[in-house]
Image (cartoon, rainbow, N blue to C red; front, side):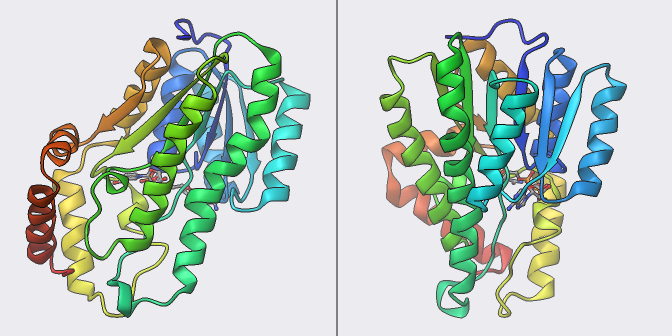
Length: 277
Ligand SMILES: NC(=O)c1ccc[n+]([C@@H]2O[C@H](COP(=O)([O-])OP(=O)(O)OC[C@H]3O[C@@H](n4cnc5c(N)ncnc54)[C@H](O)[C@@H]3O)[C@@H](O)[C@H]2O)c1
């Protein structure tokens, strides 16, 4: 069920202190929604809250680590007690990683899976019951990545985490098909955010020159996070199933359905030119 009018609706956004999450919180605030903004970074969150309030919207902030089960449980309970069940839940918080498989340690795998997969699982697990019990149209958007549809070399753990989010979200759509909840998979491509400036992890084998090149690529070719944010607002208004945002993301998504070999060749070529393969 689409939520056509977002005025006064409660929208929870994780990872709201930066990039896509920040832009999304602001985009829903512009529609008159009340925003619950969560992030690890409490200081940056306070600044985003000021921006939201400057738009005339209400905002609650929570410093939460989405990888921490107990913290997300408490977060959901507190939101429920203060404002009630959210109408829209956006599980966006996530971290990147760059490095060839055998040149990386295993600790980064655990960290990426904890944040990118379990963070989304925790959000759904603790908010969905109250969203279902409250009734009326409600919407969950799980932020995956185009890397979850067609991985590139050197992003193994990241792609695995996003592939897990995408495929699990697909199953969740089936489980909730007869409920009041719409579920959308969000697959951004190259979006110019801090994710390439503050890599959560980079293998020692990745040179500074490669990182600088990649950063420059995101800055020149990446699209602004607001493009993804506005696509999420549209998905809630129109009951969207999948959001494909960013340069050539929709094209690559459909090419992959026709030829896995072709998309693999394209990704290998791109990675060699970028210097991380
Ligand atoms: N930027 C891109 O090109 C791109 C492409 C595809 C998918 N994505 C996905 O979009 C989402 C947002 O990324 P972004 O590009 O805006 O990055 P970003 O680094 O600008 O923002 C991510 C935010 O998440 C927060 N965060 C990180 N770990 C957290 C945790 N454990 N608990 C709570 N908050 C946490 C960070 O503090 C930060 O504010 C991520 O899931 C990312 O994987 C980004």
